[in-house]
Image (tube, rainbow, N blue to C red; front, top):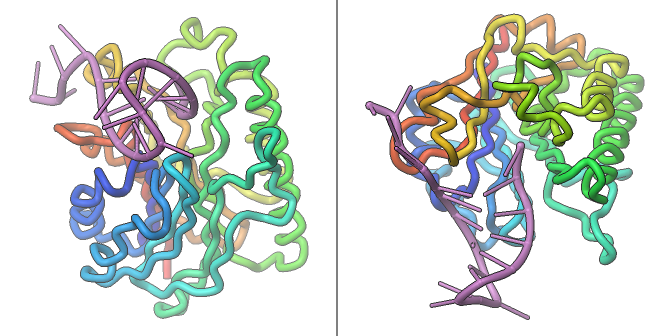
Length: 265
DNA sequence: ATGACAGTCTGGGACTGA
């Protein structure tokens, strides 16, 4: 099974590129983030025409996550019970969706498509929200894995954390900014203790995001913030990983590129 | 060449992103 995650930064703007990527990349399952649309605006037909089922959640022009699969898609659910809300209005944002994929090829995998809050500034309420969101998700999946230790679970998406210094183009530039702070890195790494291993780093070294501004891509001044964390039973089946840097090229690119893992059947 | 922000909307600028 080829499983990919991609912050596509608007599914409506990017739909042609997404479908082309699915077909070219032989992608069985694609987790998407930053749909930037509501359900009644989502281009379901484009996916079904090429053989993919889709589950998605989107409330407005912000956030939005989805999972597309051509190897079965069932048991979908939105968010998690302890998911923090945002703002005075206590909004449940569209940042997490899960589903079981792979049943048609006898390789059931529970996939989570995640769009971790940005944090904005270290002293911003959004930063505390981000840390709480990660902590609560970690606790949720830790409990789930404790209940089903053999489960194949993939936590994939835009984590909005650069866990190592080498994951940003300049630590000097990020001094005092979000994504590289120790509490964020601790929150990211805490999933390890919960039983989830990041499975792409041992196969590939590359950024996954380059800002649209300041010629960041041509200068290769990027960040590595998109990751795949796997439960033990899944991690042992991961045989490779790729970061498709070509998807950042040309007109109409997202600022993120897809991260792909190969899972043995 | 991979090129100097981009997407969305209770829109005409503001907000969000990282």
